Image (cartoon, rainbow, N blue to C red; front, side, top):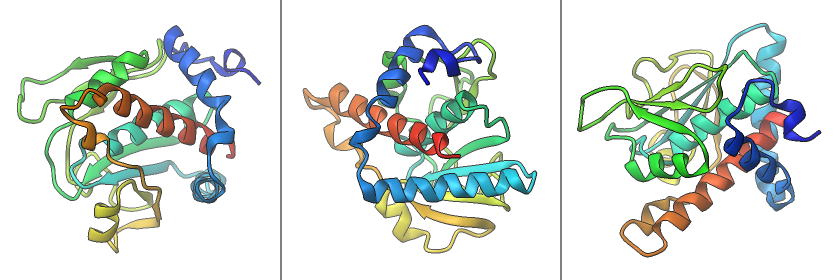
Length: 214
């Protein structure tokens, strides 16, 4: 099935093309990571069978880069596959701000991103991906703080530091490490945009694959 057949939510055209390309790359996902993604899909399937909202919280240390990308791409992928009960969240072991390099990478692949608040230290961004979908409101927060769920959720650990710092995540039904390399290593280098876009592609590819298994 091509994305045009899935795209009933009015995904922005450039983003739809990007998603088609990522779906065609599922063969790039290693067997080890496929097993992790299969676990995530199994949790989602189980919650749907229980007729409960599916709550996924993606956690990294500062809630500034990887956790935002995974939250956003998991929601886009869920909507595309008709998984309307899936709700996605993100948080950190400490709060900083959504990194502007992530905002720039999202814009490059076709998202519309606007600043919603005047808080310059930790602005809230409205991330739009489709004509018929509500925007995701993204800002940095500790993973246990509102609007994040405190019970009946899956905690997806997207970095090794957060994984080690939070051996127990209170209230979660599933704690699942799906780690990604930090694009921060490229900050200020000639390859900065390339590395951020590479991480965006990887996370998109894997979240789309996970939702396709549900």
